[in-house]
Length: 321
Ligand SMILES: Nc1ncnc2c1ncn2[C@@H]1O[C@H](COP(=O)(O)OP(=O)(O)OP(=O)(O)O)[C@@H](O)[C@H]1O
Image 1 (spheres, rainbow, N blue to C red):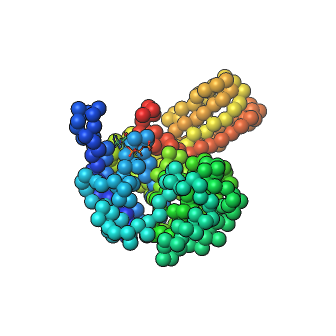
Image 2 (spheres, helix red, strand yellow):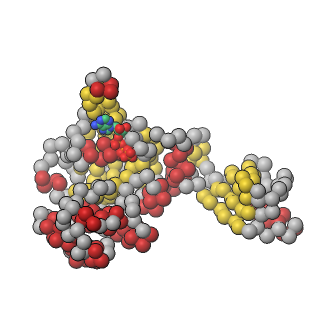
Image 3 (cartoon, rainbow, N blue to C red):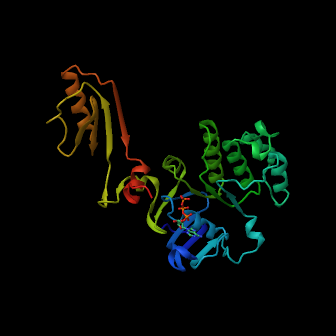
């Protein structure tokens, strides 16, 4: 675990039982079992897990929306189960489904929410920044998914919170809006806000997160910085610098003896090759020299590092839950 510098959230050994459930003959079901995490100020902390891993339950316990069965939680130094309304005003929550009133129009809604806080953000700047002015006359019920998403983010930010919970913040966003939202998240992080992100999109986590917790079955599996996770193979516990080289060239080439013995070359489709393993600059030089000798010019050439998605699939397995 990280050394807590100035954590906005500390969860230690969280346990959550739900039920009693008829499907379990009236027994309780443990959906979170001993989960621990720390989220710091000025950082984006991502909580990743497959469907049903326990992310929503954990964050709802952290926000005081569900009562925990065991363990301890400190949200901005207070226990969310017993804290008063004062704590709520320091916490921003962006839910996937917004929870926004369907007949409201965006700007009056944001002004109304701002009225509930002592130190709200500048609404005009927020509206302009998130492009909300482009749909300010439309009621919430008629907004597109991406527009609702941007409004939900604005609503979570209006109170100028110290900690911001984001559930799938880029869901439904077009590439421009996604970039706008990511830039804003990075700025808020740099200004000292503690941001907690749950997402299924590994690319989002890779781009945004300073620190990642991967959970499964209601407990921690691995944690680390994105760079640290990418360099560690959790199935073999080894340090990896794996990259995959993809290229298209004439079909049926025989690379025997061209590359180092630990590399695997496969031709997945006719003329479509991949080389996996610890590729070195010497391997690349040997390959291109071999092409040059035979006057082979590949139609495409791509080198890809291991992604967070690869790490996640190694840990959570490749079967659908
Ligand atoms: N009240 C409940 N009754 C029965 N099962 C529950 C209840 N609350 C949660 N669960 C189960 O606990 C597990 C964890 O649920 P949770 O919603 O926290 O997962 P999640 O990681 O957020 O999943 P997703 O990515 O699909 O949103 C799931 O298997 C869910 O079905």
